[in-house]
Image (cartoon, rainbow, N blue to C red):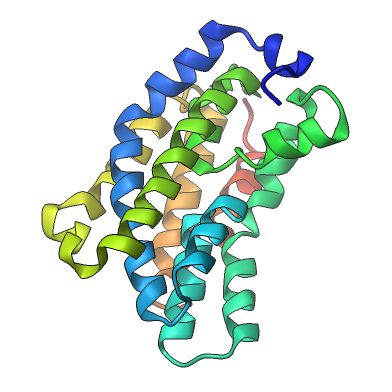
Length: 227
């Protein structure tokens, strides 16, 4: 794959910019990858399965949901259902990313695997996705997540709980910082405010993950606002 024409055509500036943009986030991703490794091992997933899951699924919230359900004695079907619900938001992410992808089907599939929340957020440019920034960011995050998973599976509970170091607050803070740069108009402000209020109202009422999905309705509400 190193000799792929698609890879050779990637502008180095875009890749590097994406890597730099997510470098601070990667620290938290590494720590939470370790948390997932610990939880998955304790849930009886063994050593290999959590690592393979991180490489192929690459979706932290869904992976945590699967491990949590299995650890509590839930069925595999319930674990899969929880993961699917948490990842429904990627339907919208995928729709916005698809027009920016180029190359053959296999290459597009590989690049789409790197479209997660953080890489998608830092790749926004004038309402469009810069695929080169997304690839750079996604690669850094994938390496951090998988390295953390390996450390968690191998190192075990000796690593401790990332929340003890306050790392559980890093994701919300970093996402807020990313959001500020995207709110550049009346419609964007309405979408952000409406989405936040919807998620806040639903958080104590519905299972984790669903408030995030429902918050996307904020964008629908914003469509009725004059830009």
